[in-house]
Length: 136
Image (tube, rainbow, N blue to C red; front, side):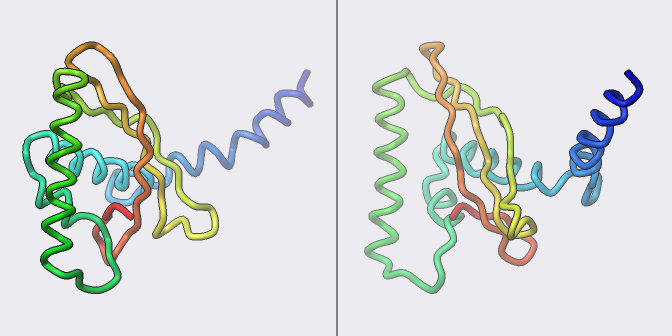
């Protein structure tokens, strides 16, 4: 019995220490998920341009293309309104970092809670640029 307990502790110790490592009181994983939630909350509240600007692009994009991306954000939200009566809440489900590039890449799992009581989980790939998490 003691061997089983030691084995379980040995297997769980790295997981517990990974969950408890913090950066200013937050785990690195949660910082990416909180940024993704903030970006989607902004979209839900009509922040189409902010949502578009928080997508990382290596280099500048033409203004005409940016306007199309903003319009796509509006159409997405309009479709959610039409299909589900809109989004009433966004919740963080989980966040996982890429083990090879754990300090800069993460997948945030968000739960979109709709007004018709349905829910949908989405994965938001995130990348850390400087000190800011952005959607990839």
